[in-house]
Length: 66
Image (cartoon, rainbow, N blue to C red):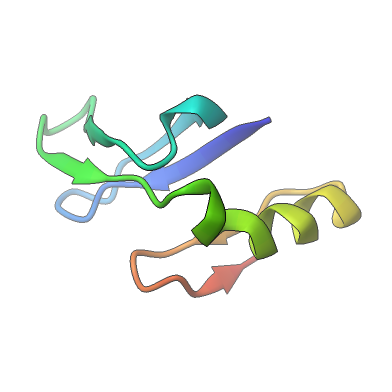
């Protein structure tokens, strides 16, 4: 499973491996560093994604879309 992230500065969307959760990552577009939520914070959206078989987005405030 992968995590889709959106850079808070430029809005670039990246797909990351699940092991990148709870880490700081660098945007491949603008090079700014930002934190990916932890797996605990992603538990609800991950369950929704598994059950839906689709893509779920979580913003920096923890709101779930998808």
